[in-house]
Length: 138
Image 1 (cartoon, rainbow, N blue to C red):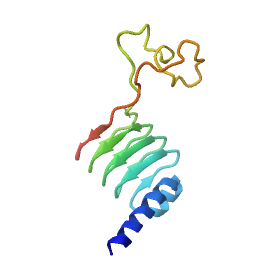
Image 2: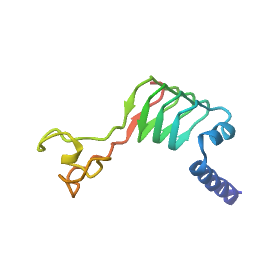
Image 3: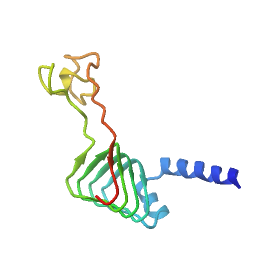
Image 4: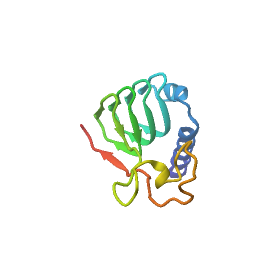
């Protein structure tokens, strides 16, 4: 019995990795993911609502929580019964506030998007995001 549970758990993990939003709607009937919401590496509990144009990455959202429109969540753990308003941004990259000429990414990071890497050829500041934990009933 333990082996079957382990196999089912691994199958569930694999399915989560390959599911698109449409598949989420079909597979997890208790959740509602609105059109134009983008989810990447996201785990959802039961009865989670994600409103349109939200971007959620590397995040876990527990039961009975919702995310408002045009919200960005990155590297977050959200507890049960949480309400995240529209236009909230959590998990944005860090930037230095001292020892650099500017907070413009070309001066301290190789993750510049389309900026030409003339000013930096080595990353000198860790601009990765911290893990944010929002506990239950927030």
